Length: 59
Image 1 (tube, rainbow, N blue to C red):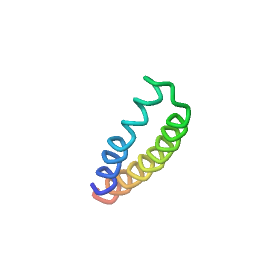
Image 2 (image 1 turned 90 degrees about the vertical axis):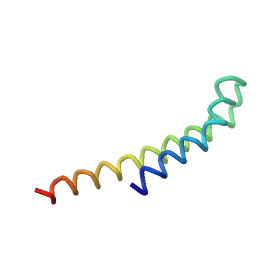
Image 3 (image 1 turned 90 degrees about the horizontal axis):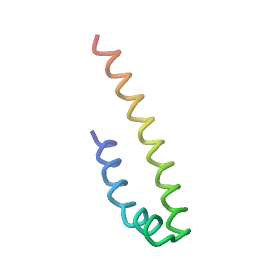
Image 4 (image 1 turned 30 degrees about the vertical axis):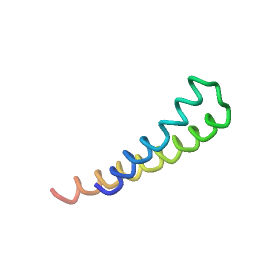
C-alpha cells in the first residue's frame, strides 16, 4: 500500500506541470511531466511485481 500511496502523491504533484504543458505550452513543464511519468512507470512495475509475488505465495 505504501507504493500505491506514492503513486497517488506523484500524480497529484505533477498536476500543475501537466496543466502548464497542455494549457500554456510550457516546454520545460513537459520535460518534468515526462520524467514524472517514467518514475510512475517504475513504481507501477514494482507494485505489479509485489502483487504477483503475494498472489503466488498465498496459495
